[in-house]
Length: 289
Image 1 (spheres, helix red, strand yellow):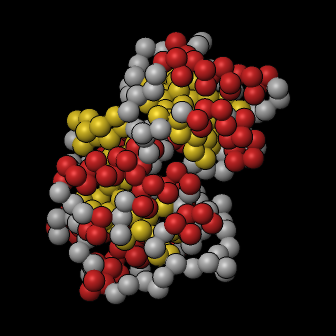
Image 2 (cartoon, one colour):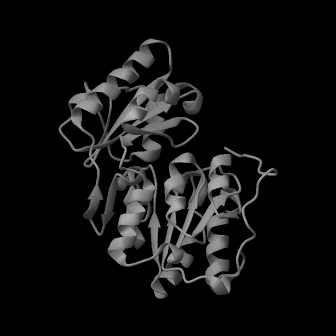
């Protein structure tokens, strides 16, 4: 979803000589991926160079861990996956951290979604467990959206009754999530995170769960400072993550609030903004970007 930022631009981009980057964390949709959900062609070349330099690359997404692991299967060794908006962090198949929801809260959220649907809102819930995602809607239009982000999913009779550690409930609204679904879920904001993570998506998580909290835990574990961390994001679920890095970049196509929060501006996702910025800041020998 493109935005205009003529009224506000972050500070000028710093020189590459100032950077001592040890950790690169990037959102996926609207950030690393183009609008067709495609990975940049030169990503694998850049990742190989980063590995040679000992720089850790970490995808941080609202997407499911299984989806991220499949996307990066050939280079996943040692990579940290910050999945489900920070509620589930995995490295080499081992859980580093998670933040499951209380089952009673899951039941209440599912009930709220059912009321919205009964009132005419074209919305569906995705209950996100560690093992799988679970949905009740089985129509092809809804499942087509689910498949984009949850490669491992099941259609069940009652998503509130699944036997799994539920780390997030995601809602897909065929209209505007920011204008319709998110306001309807405002009562949950008193005790939980209600985050608009895309034009059509709203995520409900524990208040302690977000990409930024997951990133800060990872930094402590690895002994990496915010000054050594480079972060890219485009939407509201990236805000806390941007706060955890001195080298925070909003994409040129980012939500206006993301641009206000970030320290710097990167080219748009469709212009290879992540790779172009990484190559420039770390002075990587990659031509044509």
